[in-house]
Image (cartoon, helix red, strand yellow):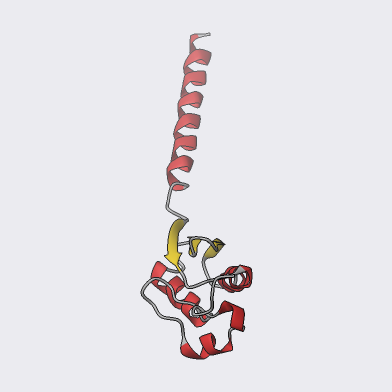
Length: 120
């Protein structure tokens, strides 16, 4: 009976160590979040930015709050960076923090999405 108790204790210890090692391995940072101030003005801007970011490598999700004009992006930091995400938003025709909108993309935006139009 004493041998069974020792064996059971050893198995429990090994199982604990195994599960603990799996937990440590799974704790590598696989996602990060960034908020980027944009020049978006309407719901169509929201669709364009969220849709465009969905195709960016490493982006897990994005959400634009039209009222605050902030795009909140969850991404894999080993595949992209906040600076790359700002450039991606710029290429869609919108300002992204200090990165100005790409001129060619901005020119192609619908009139309602231009930053100099009155709020609607």
